[in-house]
Amino acid sequence: MHSTDSGTRGPRHRAAVLGHPVAHSLSPALHRAAYAALGLTDWRYDAVDVTEAELEAFVRGLDDSWAGLSLTMPLKQTVIPLLDHVEPLAEVVGAVNTVLFQGRTLVGANTDVHGIVAALGLDAPVGTAAVLGAGATASSALAALAQLGCTSPVVYVRAVARAGGLMRAAHRMGVSPVYRTLDHAAAEIGQADVVVSTLPPHAADPLAGRLEHASGTLLDVAYDPRPTALSVAWAAAGGVVVGGEQMLLHQAAEQVRLMTGHPAPLAAMSAALEDKLAG
Image (cartoon, rainbow, N blue to C red):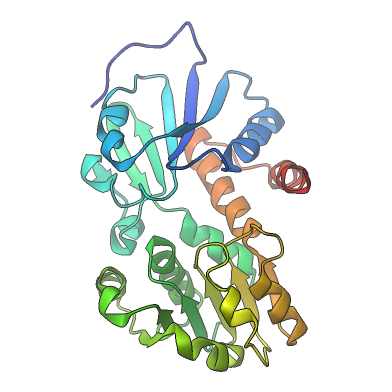
């Protein structure tokens, strides 16, 4: 799958986040803080700009010094045909955000689901829920909500006819969402116990201006700007807000555990994340 060059002249263990664009990624700050706290001085983590067209050549060219990859958009689905094995959760969600190197075997995993569940931090099962968006993170949100007890959330999308990928993922999960267009969202999402917005930065801004009431918990996976317009409006309307950086923290922590075999040092990673966001 990749060359046998041991890479002994460089770090013994390498990892990186891949995406396009990727310069804005906070993953290096999180993973490097984890390595430092764990005393893993021979580990290195980088950000590498890789397009969908470049991904196969990049992956095939990696040597045995590599331990894992973090994947951001648009690579979470593109990578799947390149893998030797896809873990069941990632397979059913249809999105891989983590690649683990087990010898010459490439294994795909999904830590976004864990990130959403951990970020929400709920003690009781979710009764009603809504998801905004139809991409790979929306699929992870459906899986997370199913784990939390809600198998029939309402999903708000720009066009129902273009949500085929999400619909197929939902079918594989055994969940039964109701699909509605985004123009219904502002009047309806305030009634949900949990709302997960997976829309890109600023895409949810029009909803913020029309939101009238909220009593549940909002997780807006966008964190730039921080806070988002939707988060500000949600809090003002009476709801509880969980920042998208919390999902990022917890999905990265699970990646650290999978790649290094050590429990993630959450406090050190959280402090590094806050420092990066504040800067």
